[in-house]
Image 1 (cartoon, rainbow, N blue to C red):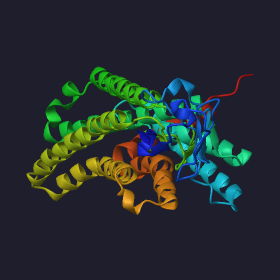
Image 2 (cartoon, helix red, strand yellow):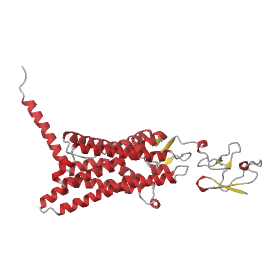
Image 3 (cartoon, rainbow, N blue to C red):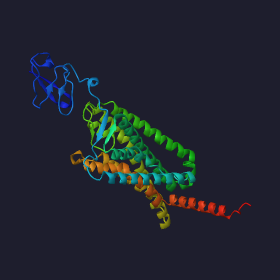
Image 4 (cartoon, rainbow, N blue to C red):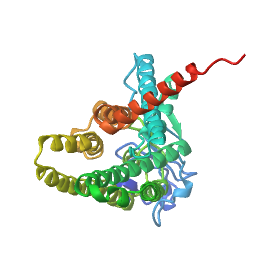
Amino acid sequence: MGWRRLRRGRLCHASVGSPVLGGGQGPELLPYQVSLDPGQGWPKTGKRQEQVDATGPIDGANQTQVTEFVFLGFSRVLQGQAFLFLAFLTVYLITLLGNCLILTLILLDPQLHSPMDMCYSSVTLPKILVNFLRQRQTISYRECMAQMFFLMSCAGAESSLLTVMAFDRYTAICKPLHYTKILSRGVCTSLATVSWLWAILGSAVQSSLVTNVSFCGDNQIHHIFCDAPPLLKIACSDTYVSEMALHTASVIVGSIPFLLILISYIYILLAILRIRSDTGRRKAFSTCAAHLVVVVIYFGMGNLNYNRPSAAYSLEVDTLVSALYCILTPMLNPLIYSLRNQDVRAALRRALGQHEKEKASTGAQPGVG
């Protein structure tokens, strides 16, 4: 009797006369009811087909590759999908409106520096909305890989830009006399460009690790959008190297920016405590309040989304946390910056005041003939 190992640690017990070893006595049923096809050499199960190779590892070229994935995040929501469509559409429109407002204020007042958070929503929400209309939660393989790439690019850019903004707050409070020299318009543009290039490079490396694994049977993603961890869970090839590399990349992209932000705020706190007047302290705190709230929400929800204990996993909780992380958080950030940031409110008042002056001056002009 011979024992040979199948993928994922399953053992195939074949008799000497079975087709696997070249005999002619017909296939032998295994304890878990796997039968062998004498013509093709494929063990047939209800979950997937795997090739039995008597000399070495399974050849991925002969496996049936997945062409589309199925999202299971909303699979248990049988009623109320129309309500979810309207709710997510409202959130998306508010996110676009808020970010467009901040972008307009930045163009009118270059002294403002705020990250744009509509990328997350634009990567994930349109596909979710389309699937609600189709009532079929699917995505093609290429669309899934593209969504994952842009999602990780946005995550990396968000972390880097929040770090740059922490340095902006540090310079404004700890070195106010040198602020305009250190953070000139050219320096801010360079920092933003480097942040996006770094994020795109990191995302390209991480996406290539996922695209190199094989998906040959199970195409059901326990999520509401394509991301690296849930995709690696359903891969049918060895994912150890990819998982270790992705874990290292996530530490670099997430933990290092968070530590830099934490160090910046330690110096900021020490500088604020040295301010003697209460008015000066309140002004310094108000300068950092909006950014600090966004940092706590972003990194807190990111840690909850990616570092939850697997023993406490449930599809409902995962769907809720994912929606909060990539859908509601981008909507809240523009509101936080608008309501808590005095510079944004002042820029909005100046823009409205300028508009009123232009309107008044236009109405005061004498009519022609």
